[in-house]
Image (cartoon, rainbow, N blue to C red; front, side, top):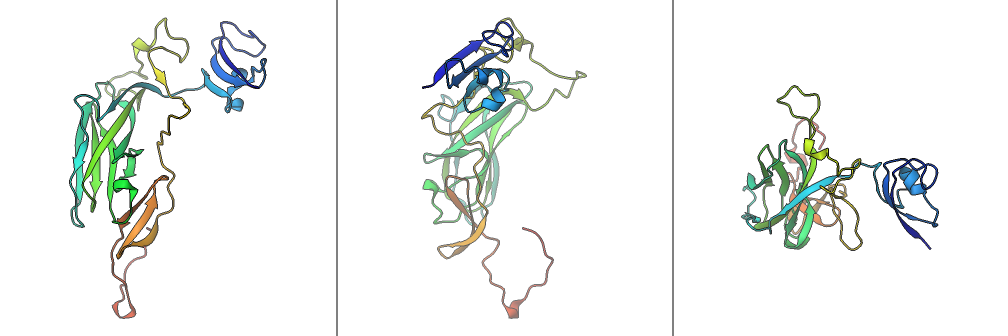
Length: 261
């Protein structure tokens, strides 16, 4: 049997010794007196659901291509010589300084991290080589989708962008040593906890948020009659054209400089 606990401590050593004043915690205990995760959360991570000792990413909002006024990005098919490098403006983030962001892309129902990810073919197939990379790009005003690559089919790219309260760095135009938002310091906040934010957590059945896929080693292979470089983002595979399709023989030797690929 296990026990679910919630604690908001207003004093030290209450209700048991070792509790620190100001601690807010939620955890699952092995017994009805198991306060170990509240006292020492780092060594009880498997049982801790929330603890004010930890810094959690603070979400201030999410914008998607399916929201009113937003739209997906459509990229036409490109051939072997059809290299592209384009940026499509998604929305204005309205933050100063620019916030920390991360996102996902979705192509024909398949989602993958928007972190310089290789965009898969429809259905994740590798029967036709493709090379197209999508990543987030943003400045002081706008958030955009940068798409680069060569041969690939036409794609309708839906997107989701998560906006965090955190920023990359302090303001650079002033003389201040550090920057903070005065609105975050108010009587309703206790430590890192504030009703102004939602916090990242794991929910049963909600699916995964993959910030980065587990990449396998890129290998040389053949798809159909094409030599390709093949890899995976951890959930589906992709294939790109290899450097060339020529086979060197003794009568066609090439002299060059060794390099690491």
